[in-house]
Image (cartoon, rainbow, N blue to C red; front, side, top):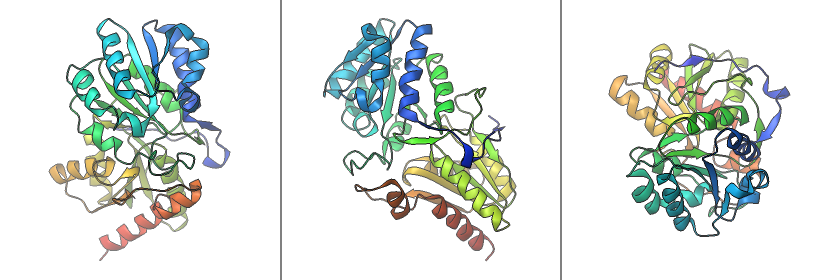
Amino acid sequence: MTSTSLTPTLSLAGAQQIPMRDAWGQGLADLANEYPELVVLDGDLANSTRADIFADAHPDRFFEMGIAEQNMIGVAAGLATVGFVPWISTFAAFVAKRALDQIRVVVAQPGLNVKLCGSYSGILTSKTGKTHQSVEDIAIFRAMPGVTTIVPADAVELHAAMRAMMETSGPVYLRLTRDPSPIIFPEAYQFEIGRALLLRDGADVGIISTGVQTIRALEAVEMLALDGIAASLLHVPTIKPLDRDAIVALAERTNAILTAEDHSIYGGLGSAVAEVLGEERPTRMRRIGWQDTYGESGANDALLEKYGLSSVHVANGVRNLIARNNQ
């Protein structure tokens, strides 16, 4: 699959900020008007994931399952076998760990049409600390046969991805964040599962990012431009299936790749890119992400800085990569 060039229509400075969890709740409520088979199962977190927006709009199709994630997955599997499309509402840390065996056996192995939505992913979880910060969920679902894995960058892409999910049968893991983030995509944006998007085009280095880390990567591209470094930015909203052609093409053009993600460097986007390049186009690369550690409670900016995920860290990572390439 070939990546699509798409330049965001707004500068980050003037972009509207929308919490992805709010967009998810409203997106479900809107989709339910078109798809009567859509139902939502919640693990006692509706006011946090904003599944309560759906519950208010469609109370007869909202099922509060309590703090019983394993049972929630079993119920979802049963509903899927009789034609419903269940959407799971919980935190990424819980869907990827507490309910994992049930997902593997009763959803993934039979390939049931259940949409697994993990909110509060990554480091920015409103000071909940390491117990609620999920740094390995992409790796878990990427390794699970038959589970599509989607990580949108903003509310517009999220809504487009949700529609694609409803129109595609089978299990999907959708990774969501909590806090407001800038809108970078136009309203007319069409999401295609498995397609990467080239947001910036430069010949000096290629940055590959996913999720809201793409926002910080865009900021890094602007910083690098001030130093005379022309960086490409490939946004990868679908971790599986992966747009291998786009990754190889970017490596061919730049000969240096940096990946950036709010996830462990083991098993996530960086690992997926390294696998592709190792098999098809060996390229010097660097991975920005969690360095085999758990997090802690703290303010967003402080956490991003401490754990090496800020736009400054991305830009510095590119500078170091270029310096190594020039040795």
